[in-house]
Image (cartoon, one colour):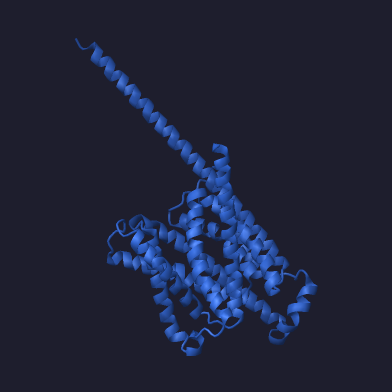
Length: 367
């Protein structure tokens, strides 16, 4: 009975992880569709964060009402900085990168986030690296592989695969607007923006760690981050998006893309990811990240007619290999830490027992 229940819970977790990656993959495609039909690159994240704030705010207020620490000016400044890195820069770079590159390589580049996070955490002293141990060496090698893969994607597009499909679907349309050189320049700029997106994402996770210790109400923290991100995008829009027509939702397709971004990408995905991390742990959830890249590649090819390029495939493969090596190193590090804690606890108990034994002997010797 116990084994059957365990297997059932495991199947629920696997199904939830697949749904999570499918929702993520859908977001890449939906955002690209939004850009293709002319939705403003600034208005789109504003509506997304507005919907997310409306969804998360009430839950944060009522669920964490008793556990929420008091607000201070210092915390508000930290929330603002988190929003600047994790919302404004993160989403801004992502949209620009997706506009110039493709959903497939946007998803592929995101696999490098654990390696970039490791570099930042190590530089700030939040992550310890012991190159004499296999876990430390694995994290370094995995980071090099991931960064190398991202570099290949950025600098080397390579010849297209499935050339006939490209000619029949996209080549004529692209040749009307872009020369081959222009397309390569846009691709490079897109990959650079996606790298900025990954750097912002990693920086947000590193900066969030000390803030969570001071303010452990995670729903409220996310709501404040969304609020300040919304304010920052509105400030940008005041200077860069003054055409009132760009603020109007003019078709059902535009409405669908905005609702998907707000409800699914910022609401359902957040809740589902939190549940999966609680049930399986962050490493187990991260292992499924490359599934998203595969789903995006097939969906982008089937729906958008996007092309596969050899340089992107090579770079994506290196990033995925690097991801798994880094995760393996983190897992090994946790095992060694648990062993050290176990030995330390055991030694403490033995010393305590020995001390108690000596005390009892002293007491028995007293007349």
